[in-house]
Length: 410
Image 1 (cartoon, rainbow, N blue to C red):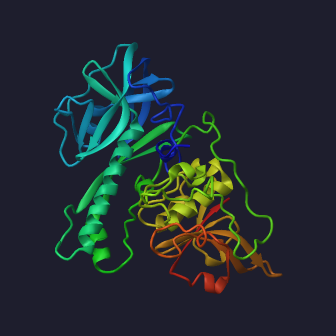
Image 2: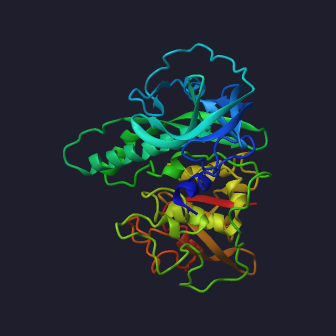
């Protein structure tokens, strides 16, 4: 599966029923029938609104202005004649007037690849122009904001590691998160803020940044597909039924070991990654978060994608948000003795996957078998070193780094 497609599927599997994103790839100028539709959307935790949109092949396209106005952001057409819009997340809307009511029940439109420029950074997205308004899938706004966040974090990291910058070029980053609630059929769209100043300070002070430069995680919660309408993307391997051998590699990451994880130019060989691990960005590939989440998906399959737990900048949020009612199959546990096979173990600045646990005759955990990535602490994936089974006594295991908790499947 291609990189562009998988990036939408994994930290960000996309909803298909009341779709705000999707995998349909239209031609350069395919003529399609757009049918008037409604979507239930809640902005910034406010009241649920009915947003008019147009549905094409099961996917909802929304007016750009309907989204940005509700988030307090400005939007405008690209001035040089290119197709698409520019979103200005730090400017107020140019007009707060209620959008015109859509009355055209259907229309023939040309779906094309357009530009969704977020704070000056160009992202490509499917769109169409109808009656002077551009329509995009809702998830594309979050994807564009996350792409720009990657750039911002990389820039701040460069500044922090240099000698001359006293402050980052931006103190905060305004982003967009889009979350599909399958129970209520409501789409939550929120304006988010990332503290770039703190990210700068942490790097300059020699600390692990509190903000993880993770495109997948920056969206915090991904737009979800309706469980009843999506295709099965991952076949779960299941939790182990016996203790693995120390040093064994259990994760199935590469499609062809001979092709490797990287291309000749050093970029990630996304086309050679299996589904569960084809997610994130060039920056997050090889990190502990990339591997742990991938192993979680590989073990439990789509059920993990149906539970919207945060994989965001603060690792502690992984545990806390697993307790959220949007995660009916997950729980977050802070008791270090509550470790179970198939859980994520979260520490300050690190996360790993627990493969197996040995218990004594009283049923207490005594030994933990686990796998992890970024063992070389340079963000590079080494197939011959990373992800191998390690074994530690529980007491030593929970003292490796400051312990936060476990994300477990109920």
